[in-house]
Length: 136
Length: 136
DNA sequence: CTGGCAGCTGGAGCGCGGTCCAGGTCAACC
DNA sequence: GGTTGACCTGGACCGCGCTCCAGCTGCCAG
Image 1 (cartoon, chains in turn blue, green, orange, purple):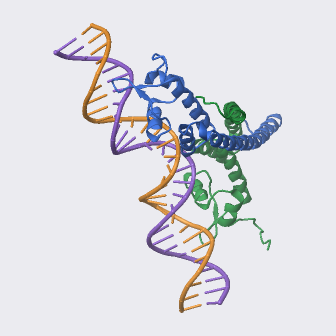
Image 2 (image 1 turned 90 degrees about the horizontal axis):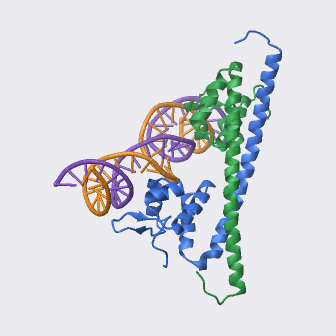
Image 3 (image 1 turned 120 degrees about the vertical axis):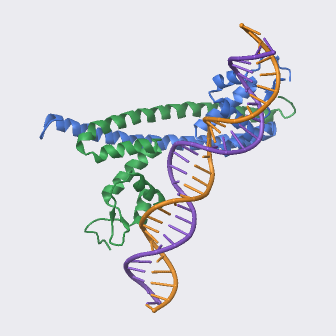
């Protein structure tokens, strides 16, 4: 706890830097995704760089489709300290595999979309070249 | 029993082939994503191959993150016939671009996850090699 | 004739992930 | 002293995309 007392961010700054809304930050704290945010004397939150880094991790997990329950599990492990690193590693490895699957699935579906696009283009091309009837 | 002068599928068959639940098929029909499914005399649905193909398209759009409202718009265009092909093409092209963004974003986030995994591995490695140290 | 089963309908309910709101506290500035 | 503005809290509410349910019909097997 040696931090230079000045590295703390106001809620507004944390919103800006994390990209989460203030409501979401409060929500995450409430459900335990974000532990023990410091407070100013007034009761206002003060986010540390550490908090911000953790929020970056949460964003990453969230954006790759991990549900809140999963993030919560990860958060609890993280609170468990160094002893849980192996478990956290496992969680991330499994999640990484799921992300890989997502990517593959997305690419496959994208191919279908592109095939359809090609089909539509061909149709329009044919129609333009051979105006079978009336325009417009 | 390849009866099938008409190739119509029962609800159960449609569920199996489309991968959507029966409730979802009914829901899609209700909200207008799936127009005019035929009925047997008993009132039971009979899905055509055409319906199944359309459901495939819907799955593709849904799985790539298009919201129901977007699919609905696409469905309405599709019901509009050949005259809407150009608009449908535009919709799909835009959607394809969004899928591309999703892919890029997912890949970026995956890199972060992998970096973290690397970090954890390094930690475990160091700990295993040099068990006496305390850190933090 | 009797069951059982597949499917029907309209409508209520759910899980997720936030988002919004009323009512209040402090600090600072005019 | 008064007003503004950032932030606080607990709890209600929301939009999405289904999912479930009660109560019913019709068909086929035994």
